[in-house]
Length: 556
Image (cartoon, rainbow, N blue to C red):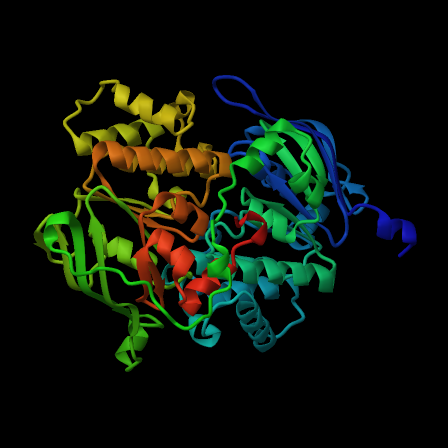
């Protein structure tokens, strides 16, 4: 290969323009977007939800829906324009040499095939010369590299048997299966806790250094941008407002919009004493002896087991594993309590049990009334008292209902609104969440990931429950919207005297929002206490490891 070809950009996008064709008329989505991606380079694309980041990635992948129309510009890969290659060549490039890690990990996996077989089939589809045994070994190696625990055992598990963060790691393994030239990663770490996120970022960085693969990283996480990218592209309303090397963007941004994004990044506040604390295994004292008068929710001895390899294997004597083991938590009236821990630590399982969506051993008391947690659904009596904001907004919205219908149904559930009314409450909530009222007539698939998550938040708040279980409600939101949502949640909890369980891996958001905190590890409460004390004085090694995994640039 000549020196000129080595230095030439691997990908060039020039003056790309896209519009969306709908019954209401064409709307511009991208306008005059231009950038280059060098070999062995990581390019970050940041911007608010709806800025066109994912659409730009899909345009490079050739995955735009028919209603999107390219009106200008060119996309060139390795010196060849996609407009000049044959359909077969284009499919080969976009299927093998350019791979993707999608934001919605659930829809990226086949629910009827074990995760190991999905990785293995991808390897065989790309390299037909490998034997089944060789592909199996490669698949196991990839599961190990992305941090799946017990890969030999979990190989046979299906997607629903993994946590959200673990499913995302499996999607990353599939993207790496063919050793592509370019990986387009759309929010690849949004569902991951801080320690696993650090591991995945290190993995991607090592892959770039070892193999020369190039990565386009679409993200709203400024911490991820600061840790891994070489250059950054800032987008707003379908246009590029600024692009430069990462250090220049983060330290001396030229554009006001870029400065606004950086100012909205939550900073984790840690005292110097905490940073220098000895890891002696200490735990913050946390009162669990209060009477029921000031406590809305009390759980005692919650335990949940599952078979590690499915029901069929459990019949053969496989020892069950604990998703939760003897969990005791308390929630005061009108407060927000944080639940933090690594992926698979039992956070979401706890939330589903409290919401009446899963069963467990133990007891739950709400407002002095005890509920039967060995029953699920309406039989437990928890439905209606507890609303849940799910981690995956795409899977929790009815695809056949418009956003307006979804939110009206929630209001009817929480009150006696008659069909056909136009409540001011709905319009006010939409405005407070930063959603355009024109989105009410759309269906979920017509919204971005961040917009869908905001709809899910609105749906839960409009139902006016006693308790809201929020499972990663801000993970799909950009930093500026995230700051607004955090304020909205705080204000709404105070105004309506609601109580919230806030499950998250973002410690800075937890610190801003929550008054108390439980840290989970392997299904147990590892550490607990008032939020400020946990961050400033806890000596628990696991707690300090989670805090230490936070990008230092955004730690105050």
